[in-house]
Length: 374
Figure (cartoon, one colour):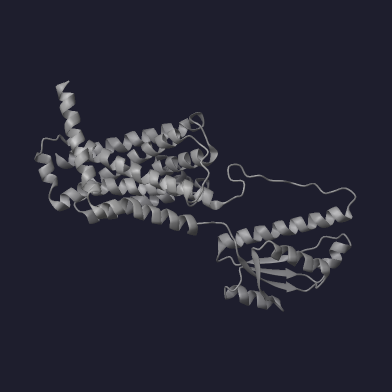
């Protein structure tokens, strides 16, 4: 009983020492709040796949009423802004080459006549392939407008109305990309914060020359590792939940799930990140090495998580590699709890997988730390 109490007292004092080292330093306090908030604000506003302005040029060889009506439908969306009226196909090519426009629309001379006589009519849409995402979305919008335009004409000329297809997106009905990106950013920033804090904890002591003093103090290696790990987890949790508040109340991302389930997912994810950081820190002799090691690991971890590109589109080897990536599970857990309101029964495979990864990374941190100080 006395041994357990002594262990608890020593561990508590070590955690207190680590937290005070961070919280008493003004720069460290600012580093806990300012960078994550700046990052989530910058990425939350800048990293969006919504297209709100598409400069385009039109070459109208038809000049009829129906051609003018389609152009009016296009510009009535508020997304397509006519940049120029082309006289020839070469004008459109030149405007795309100079990046003055993203989309070129050519209406053939028989467009109105074909529609009035009930024959198929064609349009030509040319997108700037250098800007793949914007061009693909703009082409999709223009094709949808053309489809609606054709359906309206068919409804006017046919005795029976055409079949109408209505689509609805679950969990994000307005298809606002920020709703998808910001919860993902919570996972990304939680990973960066926990890994970096863990990586700097021991490296800072080594660089300042206080690590050897810590080893001769009445602490066992297990207590030192636990103290640094727990303090890293505490500071990372504070940082992450501040980011969650920004996501909910600044960006107004609707939170559909359980706050307790989200807390459990974030806790497991942060423990994994802290353990990875302590592994890096145990092999680093300086702060510079710890920072470089962190970003060498974090960048591929984020890229292989499904945050930037779908895992299903990756080569099979990398798809298999993502099974070891804690970011993959943390990202999906946070997004599904946030937007979908998924319960534990829906998410237990993900919780099981991230728990196994957490145990594995914690064991690796213990092994690397003991090996380094022995």
